Length: 450
Ligand SMILES: [Zn+2]
Image (tube, rainbow, N blue to C red; front, side, top):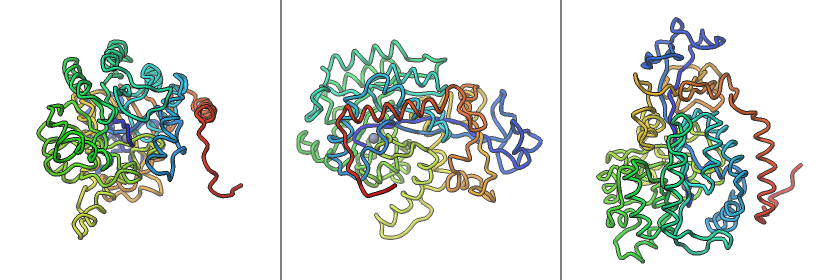
């Protein structure tokens, strides 16, 4: 939504029927449906299939359910900004832990955070959870209507604070944490911040995460104030901001020349299907893919989606973009965004989008041991006539049995390994209730229920 995303990567193993009760799959029971493993080292001697996920705003997890069925202005000014501006560091830690559990349960081993306030607390949570993240601070040096207790920083402060975070956390936690530079959206960034961010990210060899072309209003504002003929992307191209280390969240309202600008510059896109359907619109995903733009998948934050499951996003991405064909051309096209394309968006494209595809995103010799074990032998996935299609169209989060990151199990046989899940949930519930009270967010009662 007007502000965030995340992304990740993880390879998978599919259990064969005869290995269902085994602690780990055996090569002897491998189903011929799956490609042989390409990993050179244990623990995956069994058939497997790689994947890379894109997820979402971990610090917004405590805001799940506070902004459903409301208009955009209410969403932002009445719910999200009060929530974010009243968060404490401990709230952010609890939020990222809760979000991390949901991400790992859906098979995520790495995510890109679009920008929270307390990056050090997010890093602490990611280190404990055991997966990977590209963490970003929410950064604004201008803009109207912000909460009174939450003002913009100067441009210099925005850059300096992120450099300090980079020096403190980049490549920590055995290399699982990377620090990116953040730009919340064009309405909250001066040209100087945009260009200095471009230069410092390039110098430090890291990425930039920014929400781009989310709603028509954004384009209309830029068109009106910047003297250009379309929207944000046209303007960013004009000032030479677009680079291959830019991850553009959402990117819904692009015209054909702007898709060309993204393609030429190598900009990566995070497509968040559920969030787009709730508040943004139909993004030109097929056109971007056809133009060679690297499009990955994301969930956005909990108040924009509610479900932080990349499994659900794969299913939605395929259906929404098939349905869009009828909407834009007047005729149906069930071949649009086939299962293998969606699976690539969720795997290797995610790794490319977070500039990490030299180490993750596919099962290859020399890459890190990140993988997901799927048990397909449930009512929801059998029979397995077409394994790739079944992963995209049939798989549920519950089919994901174990998850490994960096050679260590972070979920094994459905158990989150590095923390007490019940304690995290109960702490998160208490903190969420206290935070809403502090922020003065009161949700209207919809209907009577017991
Ligand atoms: Zn967003």
